[in-house]
Every structure is written in structure tokens, then in C-alpha cells.
Amino acid sequence: MTFFSGLMARHFRQTLVLAFCWLVVVRASYVLQSGVVPNPLAMIAGDLAGAFVLAVLLCITRGISRVILVVVLGCATFVAGMHLTVHGTLFQLSLIGKGVDPTFVTGSLINVHALWFPVYLSLAGFLHWRHRRLDPEAVPAGRTGQVLVAVLVAAIYGVSFQSLTTPANNVVASFFAQIPGAIIGPLAPTLSTEDEDLNGSEKALKTLQTASFFRHQVAAPIVKNHPNVLLVMIEGMSGGYFPSLSRYHGLDPTVTLASLEENLRRHGFRLYRNSLSMERQTDRGTFAILCGAYPDFRRQSRKMVDVAEGRVVVDCMPKHLKEHGYRTAYWQAAPLDYMQKGEFMPQAGFIDVTGAKIFNGPGEEVEGWGPPDPIYFNNVAQRLRQLDAKPGPWMVTLLNVGTHHPFKIGKEAEQQPPDDELNAEDITPEPQEARKKAMKTMEDALNQFLDDLASDGILDDTLVIITSDESGGFIRKDHESMPLNSNVGVLAIRPPDSDSLEDYANRDQIVAQIDIPPTILDATGLGTKAGDMIGRSLLVKQPKQQRDLLLADTYTGLKYFLRESGQLLSCSELMTDCTTWRFNPERLFGTLEATNAEPFLTFDERTALFNRAALMEPAEDP
Image (cartoon, rainbow, N blue to C red; front, side):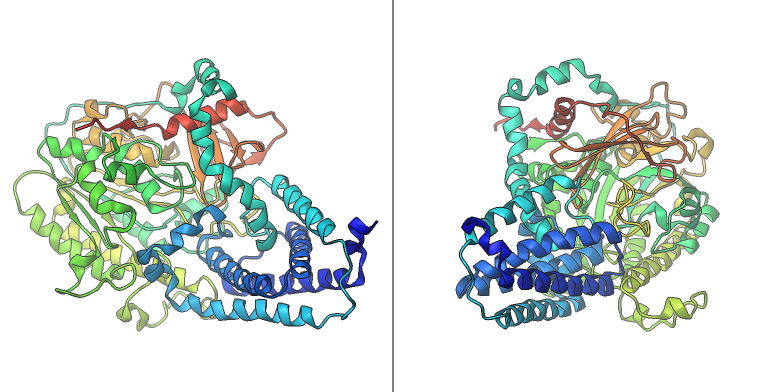
């Protein structure tokens, strides 16, 4: 009994109660900070597991180890609270290294949300102080038993949930349960490709009909008058924010973009109701949107970096337009060195590449992520007029930054009085108010931008596509219940006046970010140049074959296998734990229903598909 005596001691029982009460206080702080109220039963279960692990840590630490515990606990709870507020999930342990990037630090960490850091650090200090004042009874022997049981609790916790970062998870239990995956995860692709016979992936690829996951479909029409192309990526915008889509799917969005939806309708856009965002994070979405290939589904996104550094080559849509006389431009509001876009974009085929520095005076430093949306869209409108005045077609891709955390809207927008449509409850400060104001500011700026282009006649001969780099934000009140919460994408299309929306797929067809490049190539008469792109052009009105898609959410660690016929397989990050869902193909997000059916893909097949999605063509040696 000596081995487990530490678990039976009164001191440990008191510590366990203290740890649980402390975690309840932290949970209340998260609700106050983020506005996210998780599933109560799952939340209590998670906090009980976290309290046990934390109680053991409190019992076995002394001196410098206790100082480290307090600091790590304060930092972890702070990061978890901020991540929950911005992304709707706790942090992924394997992505913590991203936080040391100078651009990320100045853009996302040094802001008003940083005021929560001393709060959580003080809470950790209070826990230490209160624990030291428990019953002074000598701590009995049996620390080894405490540690082993704590490891067992963390292990059981880790295998009990598909995702360890959804809001109901406990930050302490989640942190320790993620450690094995953080170690194994980055090695898994290497281990699985070094010797395919060991895990059956090679055999799985030979027997599996992989073509349905890597399908290439274009209409390849003959186009006499080559239109201009304007591709607008709005940071973090979700299709769930548009009233007609949220009603159609039964979603309850944090943000409502009614004015933008009405303006899109007035300008002749088609808003697709079943649009999928492939992944989270800007570089992943941008890669899919420009190159018609799956983004990097691994924890550390490398595809764009590998292209930028010359290790691999990729056949992207802008490159084909440039080769056929288009003046291609990529104008983003954020700094170009972050995610190495300054090196990637020329490789992808852009001639004119600009970032945040163009908005500053000589010698001025970029402030945060970049300019607010009113300044950004006004600037690019002026540049578009100058570009349109020159002979020949052009293709311009835009990416704003005002709707990225910390949601910088500019002094002028901050001084604007509240919208008359907002009631008293809406005006009351709340955790998601900054996101709402940023989206409202973007909405007004984008509406004015489109109106100005229309009045200048620029839209007359321009294919305009509005989408998002990723679909972040909160879509449903119940953040635990449904898969694809962070994959509710947005895609709106307006063809040039010489074309008709009747030539495009109907608004209820399932579409994805990878469909944008082949659509643009088709619309510009270059459909035959789509090469190995796996997207399906929207000019393919009635596909002869249904396709399957790979998707993921790096913040929850979930991976998805979607069949357009109406099946979805939701799996844990290592693809060992899966749930099968069914849905109406015409109402994807509103009809998802879990089933007891066995996974329609084996583990080897699941692994093989994602391994294949990671493959890229190596660059030739100079």
C-alpha cells in the first residue's frame, strides 16, 4: 500500500479539491474572455482529469521546479484563453514554436489581449500560495504512485477524445495528453514513407480508388475575349456569416454580413451554399486557392516554404496566366516575409508582389499585421485603376488583414457611432465584439470597393471571385457537436458581363478552395493548362462522376474524408479514432448526422491518402 499511499493521504485529497476549484475559476475566466460555453458534462470530465494531474504536479514540485510550474501554468492558461477567443479551440502543443516569429509576436501577441497574461500568471501564483497553506501534514511516501497514476490519467484522457483542443477540453490534461502526439506527429509522415510495406500503405494505394480524391475536371471552353481576374481573399471570413447561408444550414453565427450579401446580390454574384475551406491558417488556404492542390495537412506547414526555398516546384494558376500575357499581381496587407510569401508568390507566377511596406512612408516600420481594411481597399482600388488603364488583361489577388486577430479597424472606424440596427444588447461589450467590429469594417470597405469598381466600369470585363484564406471564427453555439465547424467556407462568383452565371455550377453544388484555380483557367480560356490540379472547375455544370475530398482542421487536430454522395469520416490526428457521418449533399453543414457505420476507409487507406496529399515534385538540381 506504500506505493499508493500518496493518493490516500489527506494532503493529496485537499490538493485535488484545490486544483479542481482553481480550474473552475480558470474555466470561468475563459467564458468571460471568449464567450464560449462548452458542453457541461464534457467540461466537468475534462476538469476532473486536469485537476488530478495538476494535484500531482503540486505535490511533487519544490523550489525551482515549483517556480517553473507556476510560470508554465500561467503561460499555458493565457495562451489557451487567447486561442479560445480567437480560434475557438485550445492551443496545439506542436504549434507553440510559431509564437517566436517576430511578425507573429508583434501582430498577434502584443495587443490589448495581452492584459490577460498577468491575470493568469497571478492565478497560478495564487494556486501556489494557497497550496503552501494547506494542512501542514508531512507529505507521505508514494510520489512514484502519484506520478504513474497521473500518467495513466493523461493517457486515458488522450485516447478518449478525437480532439484534445475543443473548448470542453481541460488545458492541463490536454497539455500532457498532447505530448506523445507532438513527438510522434511530425515523424509519422517520414516513418510511413521510409518503408511503405511496414504499414501496408503501398498495398492500400494499389487497391484503393484514389482517383476520386485527386480528381481533375475542367470544361476547357474556347474563350475569345480574355477577361480580367480579381481574386479577393478575406482573412477568416466564413460562409456562415451570410444570413441566407446560416438560415439554410441552421447555423448561429457570431457575425452577420447582411449588407455585404445584399451588395453581392446587387452586383450579380452567385454565393455558393456548400463551400468548403480545406484547412486552417493562411498559408495552407492560399496554397490551395492558387495552385489547385491539397494544402499541407501536416502539423507544420511546409509546402509554401519548400517552394519558396527552391526544394520543390509547383504548377500554379498565376504562372499559366502570366505565360499567356496576363499581368499578374499579388497585393496583401500583411508583411511578405511572414510565411515567406515574398519568395513564394513570384514562384507561383506573380509579377507584382507587394505587402504591408507599400502602405508606409520611407523608413517607417510596419505596425502590427498591417493597415486596417479601409486604408487597404482604398489603396488597391487606386492601383487597380492604374493597372486597368494599361493594355492587356490582368489578374490580381488580394488578401486583407483587418479581420485577423487582433482585429485592427483604424481610428476612423473606431470613432464611428454604433450601427442604428444594433440593439442595446448588441452594444454591450462582449468577448467577440472586436471580431464583429472588424468584420463590419471590412464589410463597409469591401462594399465601397466593389461599388467604386462597378462605377469605374472595371467589373464589366472582370471575373470576380470572393473567398477566404481560411474560415475561422465561431459558427455554431455548440462548439462540440459537429465536425467541419472550421471548414464552412465562402465562395462568391461574378462573371464578366459578356458571360452568364448559367454557365456555372448551381449554387448548391459542393465546392472547395481547390476548385478556384481550374475555374479561373477555364474562364480565361486556359482550361487545358490545368495540368495536375485536382480541383473541379465550376464551369463543369454537371459532373459525370462524384468526387471525394480530404480536409482537416489543424487547430482541433481532426482530419476528414468527405464523399460528395453524402458521407463524412471524421478522424483523430493520427487517424486511429474515427466517426462516420452522413449528410444531404445539397445541404452539407445543416444535415450532418453521426452514424454507427464502420469507417469506409481502413487505417492504411487513410494514412496512404494523406501521405499522397503531402507529395510534391522535387526541384531539379542546378
